Image (cartoon, rainbow, N blue to C red; front, side, top):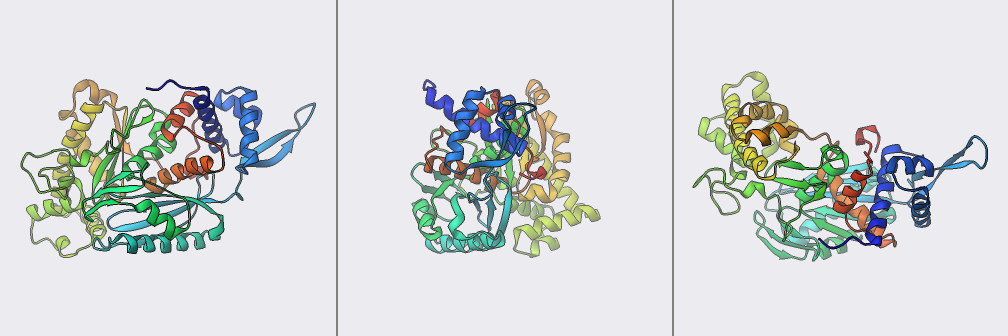
Length: 424
């Protein structure tokens, strides 16, 4: 690890201050010093920088009990907005955020898997962003920056989609295409990094240091944070848990290998399991994944024995796959999210927890907690908006060291951000 410099420490302090404001809503310099553990002089200097670039504004003055009135500060609602984009194989979801990372507009469009030609795709994204901005009453001129998540392997430093197997993308310079189509500075990354960052800021990562954030949808994967630091790996592919082997010589996975976790826990895998249980089931007549999962939820509610069997089999697969993950990284918490989890998550976790103890080492099992993520809204767009916020601060001359290091610094300072349900 490189030696931390005075610049690193100052950047971390700046981030801790912003986290304090997310938590408090409005605050005086004295309250920020008490919340973050930073000195009053440090707080005053950072406030001056952020006021100068328009990120912070006065929220009023109040009597100090003798002497000069004290100024309350808030994150400026007028400075502009950030855009978070979640591009998956089957949909495009856009959230527009204020600088306090509260959602002020959103839009979504379904996406057929064959609609993946890069130039056409970025035009679709631009259209969905226009729709979301319009819903927020936000002129395009006030959008500051966009963070865009893409499926597959992404190199954020080069702005390249390295490999998206379901789209047969190889070395697509997607950042440049997006920036041109959207007309904004763009940051790109993988959804696993985005969900891990969201969990660090707004979920279980507020309270514990070692978190695995498991995403269940068309594909599956895990965003990882160890010792409060986002884990990327040597090529930004850490967390591809969905492409670890669950069944030797098992089902063919989209990646070309056999027996991957994704082939059993991704929605196509759930459909294949149902076909093995009852190839003639009515749920298999449709071709839309979300409809299938929603129909499974209804079948569970109605006591459909095939849906109950599907959940039982899938819960055992999930327990085995989680057991491997937990034994390997020894997390404090595993958060489960994704659109599949949003529909059948509670029922699936109930079965999974029944089988999990037999899949984990006793010491690892006793240390970990498993639950649905408490992050409100779309964790992918929230994480990408967080990366866009970092990029914007650098863009206007407030440099940062990076979200992982700053998250760790804020946690060391004891800052717990407000849950988005409370208005941020």
